[in-house]
Length: 484
Picture 1 (tube, rainbow, N blue to C red):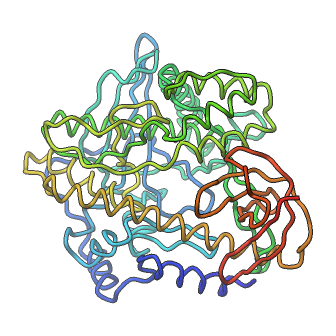
Picture 2 (picture 1 turned 120 degrees about the horizontal axis):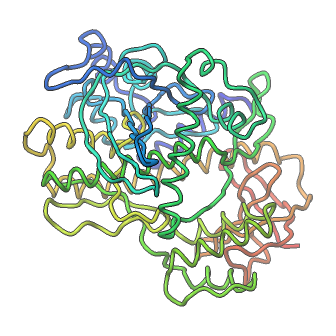
Picture 3 (picture 1 turned 180 degrees about the vertical axis):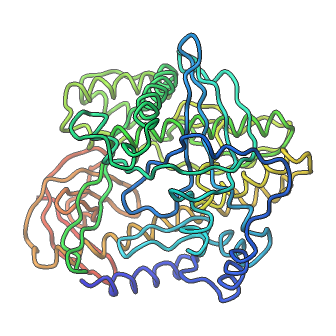
């Protein structure tokens, strides 16, 4: 299958699900004009270009949303600064670019390529925190105590400069002692110490949340592999130490952001994950491994069980993690009016206050949160009222689900092409979905999900079985199995 074929499938899937695959001419013209005019610089802006900021992301990422820097403090504490790209400075509320972002609400990452939420002149250039480029940012400045508590946090605007664009794989290999310090980091004298301090601070933040039940899950995603512009495989792309490091920093920044808006008397757009509706199935999975979970959802007990299983069966832990993730269900956005009780917190992260804020190039809720933050810093009124935030929350949750469905459909189209000559072959599989719409399983080579069309009776999420491939349809993205 050629990339052009996948691209056509992706475009059709996006249109079917109410997502815009291309930008209107007005949006592209507006983005170009914003680039010529440059970002607005009103208000108090600190100059923090002298600090040794750096980024860690995927090898091919160009839409860089965050930088970070840290410094040690007495008694084992540390100051942690997370700088988030000031996208609002280049995207006018109510304009054509904002309209496209508000419709799609997210960048869509498919096996055919990325469909960005913002025009690339912005997201991968002018609002991206590229190495060596001065950029405006919103900084979350936190004090992390030795026990992982975020004792204090403040937010302000600043000019920052990325000293090194680092990658997850490169940093993780160095932290694990299997590779030298990545060259971009070695070129900046302060960065070796920065990376070690970041790893330490992230570990403290993680341990603090772990004591409260943050779930230690290890799932893998499929990464398309092309050779000479032709799809040849879908390989696992799992977690590593550097990905965990950044995730821990972002959770802390997103929590501090939500609390800051509440302290300022501002409404906010929260990200929540309620207690799992299928807790009974999670209890049954644990029982199958000889463990007893309480009858009511308990994050601490679940994490204790998961850590025990990871130690006992590290090779099978990814499958167990995937089953639990499916049973936890998806997160959602919810409006939190000023002065009102906040929506439910995030069960999986074990935090009560959480607002997406650290990826405004890629997610519309983060751009909304950034505008709320800047209005609070300027002493102005909230740019969104409670009713508008409630509608944005509903729409963002819906479009996130649609984007996920598009990504899965295109991934299945790619996998169906890879499997089209393998009808009749068998695989070991894991049940990842069991509902009225069908029973779905995941195989590992290539890493993809398909539907069980015969022999699905009695199967539930987390079960393992052997399946035989009976049919594929690359255009429709269908992969059908039967139980052996």
